[in-house]
Image (cartoon, rainbow, N blue to C red):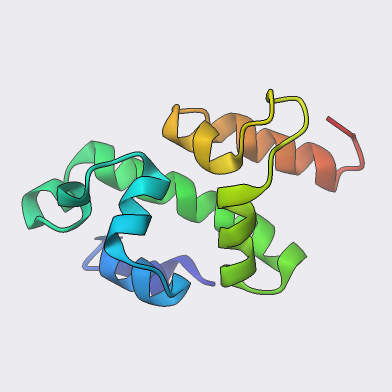
Length: 116
């Protein structure tokens, strides 16, 4: 899914992400490692921390979506598939621990044929 489909007025819009992924705001907040207020209250949505986590998740989903054929399957992978070389952590857990760059590097390595 194109990044602009997740955005509104130049920022990531949790409501659009929730709708696209057919999930709830509570589930999205948990997926980001944030409280539900962070994606429901206007001032918290605009915060650097919330926008950064939303951006990181969207970057990961967009990178793997072509592999899975849909944003829904990419989101399921993000939440549930342990990544080799990361002690059984999922992409979601790594993003929650500010390691989104590690996830993106891992995906690039797999795409290049290098096994992690």
